[in-house]
Image (cartoon, rainbow, N blue to C red):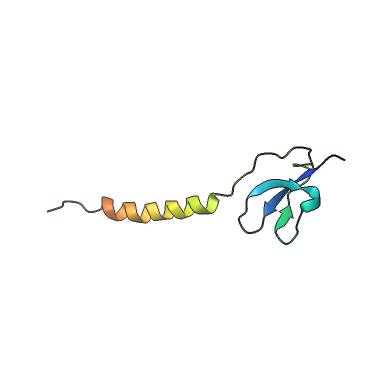
Length: 75
């Protein structure tokens, strides 16, 4: 019997990765569209969800950089 992997999205983190089809847990995962990611015999590379961290870092840089650049003459 060949093992089959299915693509899922982690509900807690938003990461997408493959799990064994028989180990799918609906409390932890949601299935990704099977038309784009059909079940396979080998796991595919994971896709991390980093959008939230990048936007938070960008907002911090925008507020910190604006006050430092508007200082003008230091004396």
